[in-house]
Image 1 (cartoon, each protein chain N blue to C red):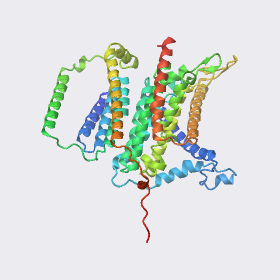
Image 2: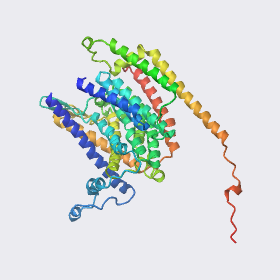
Image 3: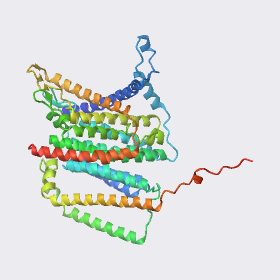
Image 4: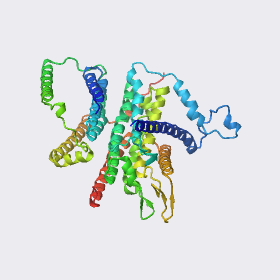
Length: 190
Length: 370
């Protein structure tokens, strides 16, 4: 990947990430996040993992971020009602999380191999065949367990949704319609 | 190096111009063809100095479609409603059109064209994971529609946007399953390789086209593709009897024209995908790299340029026929109800697609495929 292109994509990712957390309008935040994810996908492709890059865009941008939009619309979150402030506990939790993430980043950064020691990757790195071979041999158990987990999540979601549908039906049965309710009493015209 | 860049640029320009031109052709076919279907006259009110009439020709509505209406639309007031998100309202139509147009970059328009010492691959961008690229760009296409509806600050528009995004992500699954079954059949994600695999004949005369291998997949892709392009019978996001015009209620002039172009470009895109996967792409029956070899044993040798030209023309003729088929379906069927739409997608197409994929995989493995 040419260095200027990498610099551009990296800068774009950082700007979009700031956009995600700093904007007040939730839809704009979602768009910023989608831009980060597309950017990451392109970065993967540039680094040789073409298949992973496309899968990233298909799964995250094409499906998950659309669901984010959905949830924001269905919960009817008002445009400017982003989370402001928050309690002390939330702030403390956020600070701890941020510190952990920063520590992780620094560890990776300082333990990274020197640029001149980096080997060039094999020509078939990141191709569908290579990815599939790794996924279905080395990581087979993890892969199948993940799919089982997702299946359980789907079944659970449907079970919850069905129970809710049943409850609302029990709470609010259709009111019996009487003939009197249907035709309003006629006003006698004097 | 420089000459390769020039060749690449020429291919890019050719495909974009072709797509935009064919979009206009589809628009004309939609207007005049629907008039034909419904026994109306259709667009016939514009002419240049009455030229056609003087020559004694009936008005085919071409001036209307390619000249009068575009000029009218692009000179109209570009209205943005009060309280709308002005930036996203302006961005949305282009965010809808852009992913559709760039998908055509992997349309295999022909095999190798040999000019001098250069072998030109007639696929504008030869990507070995093209099928994934198609799925990715189609996935991004939802955003333009969804944001256009949201940014308009209009409830009809927002309802249309929600309907559109629910419909598109539901039918993307069926579409993906159909495409994956084809990928398993050919053992490649490269659209050009798929076209090459569809060359040759069975039993000495039947072209080896994908529709004979994957008929179920063909139907799945046709139905889910039509749902993706949001046209009747799947036009609930517009639903003019319920939602005024759905997600583009608050659009006028040029931006509305861009949304309209997106629809027709999607029709073309579905036709390009179906042609590539199921109708041999650029394959002409019995035409090989060196010319025709007819079933009877007769052959007709042709130079490479003629072969490439025939393939190019064959590809686009197939695309136009399939686009016209979609327009014909659009003017034949009534709109679905929303529960019918969701039932068809989730309880109809997805299980059929999964079953088709499993059966395909078993057959490929049993036949000793990769």
